[in-house]
Image 1 (spheres, rainbow, N blue to C red):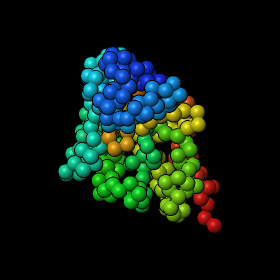
Image 2: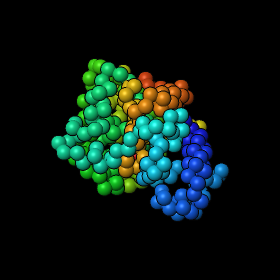
Image 3: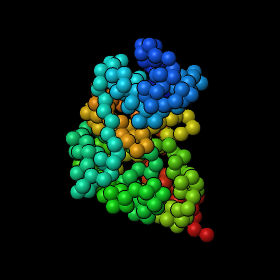
Image 4: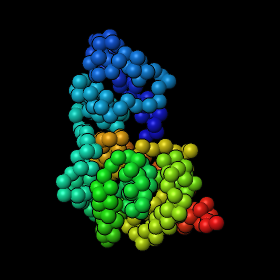
Length: 283
């Protein structure tokens, strides 16, 4: 679903809850832990963004509706969604292979996993990039390295079927050392792109990367684990959807991203190598 469509549906359903509550805006805002001005912004027809995950949870809990319904992913107001803190995943004892995220991967073996990453896909990162991003995000290097290795091992299994779709410009911005990668050394950016290309060739066709034009399409980061669940990454939390309809809706969204891809899976490794060799050619 387009970001503007998502925020529009949320706004209309928030108005429904406000009217149903019988409260004025000040009282309604206080009941969900925000101030009146913040509520007014969320209700504005010009609003294009969603509130924080904590606010979404509070609204849903306070008014006894599901997050799926509140976000327009379901017509059923029943409580069908759940929120899990990413802390449960990041800091679970025993390493990544014992976390909820690994459990969801294991349950989806033999089905297709669809993944829209927030940045460079985890399993395609070098140790240098894992350490660099751990420093700027204050996350555990050990947990991130464990997650990377788990995903690589998972993708080597013959029964794996994983598609990843991300903006082409994420890799171009990375190659130029812009954004969060502005202090990541050029030599290590080149090594990262070659490492990515090597893995894409090695893991194909069980792991397939597609690149779309991020100026024409938008997507939040999420993973769909076969027909069982979808986990939407919302900063420090995962919003976990288990109902059939929202999973199908996100699957259609993902399939539309695939259809609009400019770089298809069999071309992705070559694209990464060209970035390394042209944008980062040794002096």
